[in-house]
Length: 339
Image 1 (cartoon, one colour):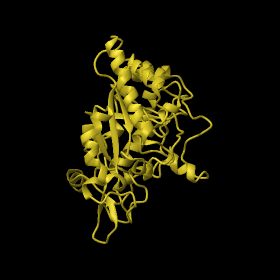
Image 2 (image 1 turned 60 degrees about the vertical axis):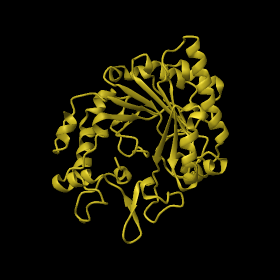
Image 3 (image 1 turned 90 degrees about the horizontal axis):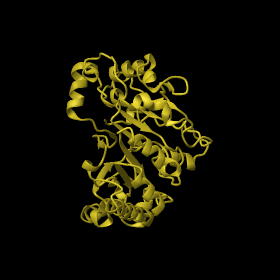
Image 4 (image 1 turned 180 degrees about the vertical axis):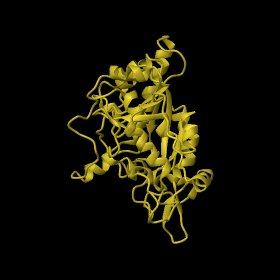
């Protein structure tokens, strides 16, 4: 109901977040070219908003007890590589004990057999393995510093440990679901058909292709796929690119002046230092609602600062859809969001 009101410009939050993102780590082994953490490795003087001095959460999950009562899902990933936090399986187990649906997304470079067993036994519901190519050449075009063989082995370890635990009746069902995720890139276009045919042979239960976000997309990008359907960006008549928008979303914004955004009403992100962020697009920590060391997550989610930010988002026009010089602009993080 609160979100339905927002479609007409009314901001009212009376509930707690139902979908939580918890950042287990803000560091990573890889240097992916379109990831803030990877970019920071190549440009160490840049500011990503994260603090390598505190790479893991500096708060206990018990601080989230009130919010856990109202949430249905918690995902353990944001900026860095979750498996670099040695306590990740315990964090997942604590959330799963609260009957929350738990998700981890990883590059799997640190997922050996021992970690696979710990994750299977943690109560994890779904694990996403990022593998953007079947060959090392296509894989490392984006996952720079990574090994495709380690990603393949990680899937195998998870499958085998899940089968062992199931036979011993230590777990029930087919959890964790193993999802292989591939970014749609020019470097792996020729391998996508083969990946569709072989992902189950690798040990995965699901295969997901995901369009890639680029920071420097206006004049194209060498990694941008050739096929329009594989891109988040559409080419304009002058040869430049702009973010795609759903036709109904464009129409609603044109008719009402409202830019709907379900994410801001459903959940939020909790960074390693305790900052509560609007969503996963606030990678530079530009729009925090506050910090859970000073107030509860529910209090911050319902705060005036959070509501003011929601109003700024839904009442502003995106640069892609409104050329008026005096039109209010969406926050910077929304400029490259297609949700």
